Amino acid sequence: MNENKEKKYRKHNLLSVLNPFETFKHHETATPKKERKSKFTTQRSWEAMIFLVCFFAFFGLLAFKMTLPNMLNTFMQTAYRLLLETVFYIMAICVLMGAVSKLMTEFGVVRLLENILRPLMKPLYNLPGVAALGAVMTFLSDNPAIISLAKDNNFARYFKKYQLVSLTNFGTAFGMGLVVIAFMTGLGFGKGAVVGLLGAVVGSIISTRIMQLATLKSFPEMDSPVTEDKGTEQNISFKSEGSVFQRFLNAMLDGGKSGVGIGVAIIPGVLCISTVVMMLTFGPATGGEYTGAAYEGVPVITWLADKINVVFYWLFGFESGALVSFPITALGAVGAAMGLVPRFVGEGIIDGNAIAVFTAMGMCWSGYLSTHTAMLDSLGYRKLIGKAIGAHTIGGLCAGIAAHWIWILLSMIF
Image 1 (cartoon, rainbow, N blue to C red):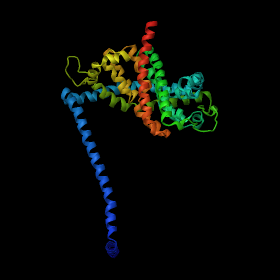
Image 2 (cartoon, rainbow, N blue to C red):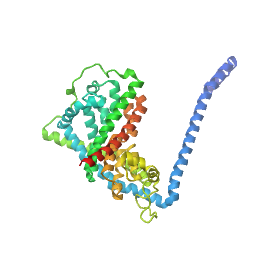
Image 3 (cartoon, helix red, strand yellow):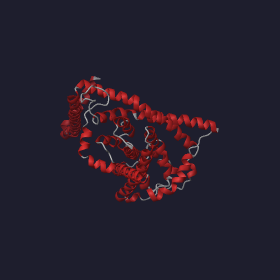
Image 4 (cartoon, one colour):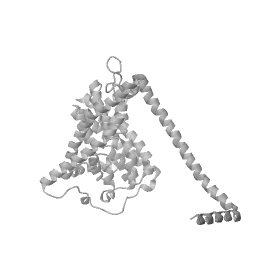
């Protein structure tokens, strides 16, 4: 072993003498790797430092105002109360609505709704009639349902490429719609929820159309069919095998199981996002002193929104700046946004108009910031992520504005 090492060493020295540039070349090629590693380490160090500064500044200011024990206790108590009082309630709704949606799919109600909505697709959304199936599916479940359809060749062959990518905006606008409407109706605001659905439709039209125009403007070559093959809609089927009773039982149980999945998926958003948002929305308990109870905090969002509340009042009809927290939270997760509503009801700052706006923006946005990237990436159009997010931001704002003014119009008539 030592003899082999010695031979390699002598060979290396001989090559160095015969060709001194070889050694220089070796060091020259090695240096950039070392520099890249050093640069990467430096960037990560700066990132860590900035994160720590922001982290301790955020919680340090809260602790300064509330005292550290009260802040920590409020943080944990709020998350615990949200889990018991809101998350499990939403999960129960998800399980029940999941079972209902699966039964509607199994026994042809979804296809019936598709046939009813089919004539509206071309004039409103510039989409083929079969796209109505995607709207119904996402309304009954969640945003990713549209992607599973878009990847089905029997479904995708009806679309041009720019239309297919706009399904991301189209489907997201109805994500978790049934759960949101059931939740708002369960709180006693059924009329507001229905008006909110109308607002979400307006937002979906605007978002889908903007996405299509922006895509064609930047990529004219996408005005071509996804595939030249002609398919039949009969191949898009959701019927399972077995007797009617067996199909009913399996659909109900499978739908409930999928509802459990949705209910579990919203837990991190509700506990993490809603807890922080609440601590920045609501103030101390009665008397102005912090006690460490749930739902206390430093109302920074409310204070900022109240400064320009005339804008939110005119656009959305919000009487309190605290209500702005719902659409802000809905950007990341509509389940987390729903976690705020019971507290708003307890504070007595919510009405039918606010529920209409919440439903419209909650449905239309439905956490698109956390889903659009993955959805477009799975379709192979990552380059369009920015356009999709921009279009949907505008669409969600228009959905809330439309819901507010529809509510005012209906209030004047009835």
